[in-house]
Image (cartoon, rainbow over all chains, first blue to last red; front, side, top):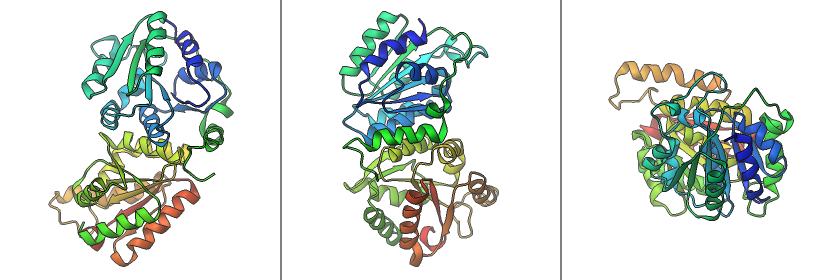
Length: 194
Length: 170
């Protein structure tokens, strides 16, 4: 199962009112490819994607918040699973694109004994699962988008071939932040200064 | 922290519209975080790690919530990765109240070598992370410092740290 194919399946399920957050990995250029418009917060560094998305879920409790994380990133701060479970946001859906590799540098622990879905379940996240085919991913994603409660889906994907670039003015640092803030400031449920 | 300091902080946070309180409980500020947890005005969130706590605060703050993160110097050390990423790269307006463990007056029983480490590291760490901070050790200035810190973090669009010490904390 290829990561880009998963994200192509996911993108049509994410409407313009939903916020998406990606980890600093191939998730970022691929998600930018399939959803260049709309409120996206791209390229959060190791361990920060899931908890940042959790913060957005509290700020926008009536919107779905989509975290597109990766195995290496989640393992960097797996205690965030406990925080997610304790906050228990009904609007957070997390996808962990698990290619079993730190970029192109070899296997992560998920290729050996570590099961991130079971870790999430053990942390207290009720809706968890692992999918290994595009059909399974599609079904799990549709169900997650329609259900309440935090959901975490681990998608076993192949390693990506080579690096993929994206428009850095849209996917990186302060310029990306400004794109995101411009998008969310116009939401009627945004509570901050405009 | 005694009830007088707790009351001033809680009242001032309310006046500032800060209603999301995030913490990983630690002893010197426990009375404060418990007071916020018992107060229905606040949405009180306990996090399992300071790093994910700061990232959580950043998401909430950029989403428009007014947020306070209550921790200690040790928590700032643990969370320095998240603080560097969030502060320098994205600038979320987070007010951080941190007990200044290791400052003069800390008689809490932690071994002196640990206290000295906190004292030696805390302020240089914040300086290295380019996080504006103030030491607040007098009750007479506590309210104003929270007000000014709250204004500054919104105005700068950046995390601000108030290191609580002296009669405010001990």
